[in-house]
Image 1 (cartoon, rainbow, N blue to C red):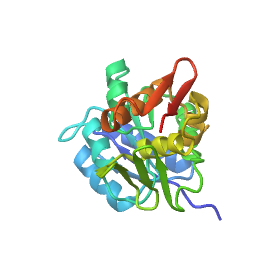
Image 2: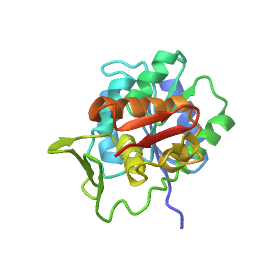
Image 3: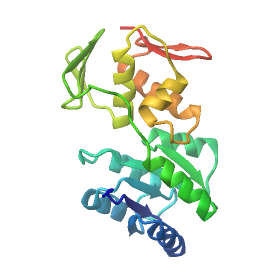
Length: 227
């Protein structure tokens, strides 16, 4: 019997929570709700959802802060986070991806379209294989996949899950150009609908933490790790 997927809704508008809950529960999902960011982080830690739909503008803790807190939870589980918000400005989307979001869904959205996006997000398949079996060494980096630790020389570097997976993919293929399509497929999964900016933001964050010289942009194609 297939496991029921769990979804957490975080929004300060009760009408929206009721609307989303009704449609998601009718589709067979187990749903919990939270009406602010602080409550959302607490519920996420206890409920361990497969997917979180998160509003951007909320009292006490906004969506960006909430997403960052959720990404810092030691849950041992890959939680998909998508912003569901009326704010469509580029800077809002970039801030959302910077905080660790997997997708950005604009309100208003029709129920059938929402169900399709939710289904796609939950079908996400990460195809980086054999990263649990040992140590990956690439240039000045050492990646301990089992412990989710990266060392740059003697310095330990902490990375969010998506950055970790992206870096692992590049390091396992040192010197080889990975196209945007390959990166999206193997890190985010082919079912997730996100833009190229998602990859760019994560690459920029890796360069900020590891140095500009380790990852090269191949214009119009993708990226490679130099090693």
